[in-house]
Length: 43
Image (cartoon, rainbow, N blue to C red):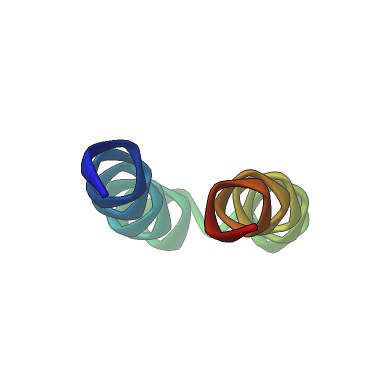
């Protein structure tokens, strides 16, 4: 549960950064990588 919380916080933080920079393409790529990491933790 600890790693999941860390990645979740980092994911939210990255959303704020990407929103400020308006880099939607980078955001989508990053979200995909994080989703894969979270999926691996859940299973």
